[in-house]
Each structure stands twice: as structure tokens, then as C-alpha cells.
Image (cartoon, rainbow, N blue to C red; front, side):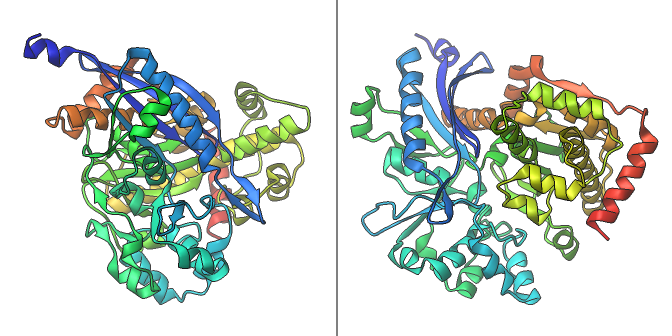
Length: 495
């Protein structure tokens, strides 16, 4: 086989895409400049309650990922690389023997509320300035402080903190490491310095020794442990350092070569932002509650974290529990038929964050128990939130943006995409749906072809997903009603 033939030979890559509601094993086949993606398995994931606290069943997640890895290997008899991406912030604590002390706690607990609540405005600004990340009780920093307050024995026993993707990687390889995108979600990392913030660690009395070493994207972090090779009946395969925060992986798959593009990574959460060459840390950015998260390679994603499809996911669970199940298409149809002349609410209202009864919570916020109104209000309020955030992005960057890229699972909701175009007045480009997996997979590919830069990786994404992408242009019908609703929304969130 000559060199050119070897270069064209297909390569096989596995992406673990772990989200709050499910985790999936994705098989990517790269050939002739195209990455095709196949879902090997999708397994429900939900936080479990124990002792009044929500946590993640990491052993169940690990078992499901192992099964999926074995199936992926059996497809072609080899796996060239593996990478993974998960939600941010949450972590597990390991003792001196390397054993997990307890299941990782879920960010929807309120452990960090008291810790953040005790901080003075000066302390909050200090933490913001040294991290570039907004203060929020669910951040790893405040979860750690909450554990120190309420579960001190666990922190006393801890010798290593591993974020969720790092913990999974450790279970597969035995190696302890992390990377910049997931580390930046913790508020223990300084996005401007590209390293953990010793100022923050010293201020809060936390040891840097607790945190895992940082690897660079494209590097091998570790190899599948030999005992797992035997257990699963598969050969050795390397685990690659990819952007392991799912938002960073998704943004890596933006289907454009233009710089500084606005995006909405749409899933359980809506991550609304813009890719930048460097962090933007200022009083105005802090006031607008944006965060500077580390992106793929040396980029920064200036973004705001907002409630997303969580509203509809929880409503869907309510319908199922009350024996009136509605599928996703029916939910969108009901909302569309109800229209936009409905009450609005703040999708990031504190009551929504930790609710166990979304129907009841939205009924109180909206002032109606009519499920059609609640669904229509949810769609409209999300789109209004997007519009407000887009305006803030324009103000912070000094640029006027007329296009937005909606990536991730939410781009399947065509009604939400069209409503976003109508409300924002922007051209909405949707897809790829599997953005987080594709971003993960193409960065893995860079391990085999180090010459691939971000532009070339995105060219692979565009060449691989052209058939699934759509464009939604703003419609003028109903503009007067939408303008009135925007004023109502602004009065609600900025009284």
C-alpha cells in the first residue's frame, strides 16, 4: 500500500456524547474528507436522589459507554481514536487510593447557594475578574465550598477532583487529566492566563494539587486499560484530548469559515454566544452576565448560559405522567397553533432552576393552567431571551450581527428556529444536529493529521452535513405583536 492509498484509508472514531437527559455512543467514519456519524446507542440519563441530594450514577453511565464501545469496535474490528464530551461544572472526588468517594453531585443541588450568598460585591467582582466566568451557585467553585460546609468529610478525604469527562476517561484509561474547555466552566480557571487561577484558589483556601493537569487538544491522554481490552474483547485504542465541555465541542463544529459568528448551542440548556480570539473581561460583560469559556484550541466562547429545552423536556415528562403523552412534534404544533399573543416569563427565573414540578411552576409564572398557553409561552419566552442576548452581544462586541447558527439537538425544532428568526430579525442557520459529536470527532481526527487547523476541521463539518442544514429567514407577519411582547419581556427581566 503506497502512502497516498494509506492516507485515503477509512479511519474509525468513537465519540461519547454525555448529556443531562441521555448519553450516546457515536461512531464516526472518516474517508475522503467526510466524517459520517452513526448512533451506536442512546441511553437515558437522569440524576438520582439520595439523602436529599441529586447525584449522577456514574457506574451506570460507565457500563453503558463500555457496551457501546464494544459494539462500535465490532463494526470494523478496530477503533482509531476515542474522545468524549459532557456537560460542564460537575465533578467527582477521589481519595488517596484513586477510588471515587461518592457519586458526583448534580449542579441542580443548592449546595453552592449559601457559599455564593455570603460573598460581598467586592469578592464577587474579584472572582469574576480572575476567572472571566460569571458567579453562579452551580459553578464547581461554589459546589466545592458547599461540600466543605455541609459534607466536610468528603473534601477532607479528597486528593483529586475530576470533572465528569475526566472521571469517565479515568475509568477507561487510569489517567487523570483535563483540558481547558471543561476546566474553564469551574470558575477555578483563568481564561486570560490559560491556567488555573492561583488567586482564586488562595482566596478560597483550596489546593491546586486537587486539580488535574491540563492537556492540549489532539494529544493522547491515555490508552484503554488492558483489563478493559480483555473484558470487552477489543484491541488497544487511544483516548484523545478533545474539547470535553459539550458546548466547546459543538462550537468547534460551526458550519462556517467566517470569524466571530454568533451561535446558539440548543439543548437542555441554551448556550448563546460568539466565538472570540481572546477573553473579554470588563465591567459591562460582568453586568450582562456573560462568561468567557475556553473553546477549541486557543479560542474563547463569550456566552450566556440560559435555560433551553429543559422547559419542554420537563413539560413532556408531566404529560407522560398524567397519561396525556405528547411527542415533540405535537408539542411544537400545539404551541404554534396557540400563537404568540400569550403571557411571557423569564426562562431563567430562580423557581425554574430547581423545580420538580415544571407544570406547576410555569402555571404560577404565566398565570394559567392551560397547557397550550404554557407551551406557547415557553417557546415565545425562549425566543425573546435569545433576542435580548443577541442585542447584548452586539453591544459588547461593537458589531452588528445579522446571522445566527443554531446547533445541537434543538435545531430539530423547526418552530423554535422560525420563531427565533421572527423575534430576533436574524437569519437563522440550523445544524449540524450532532454538533457536539462532530466537533469531538474532527478534533480526534487532528491527532492523525496534525496539519488540520480549525478552518480545515470546519470544512470537514460542512462537507459532511450539507444535506441536513436549513436556513430560516425572518417573517414580517405578527411583527406588531412580537414588538409588544418584547417590551413586556424587557419590563419583566429588567424592571
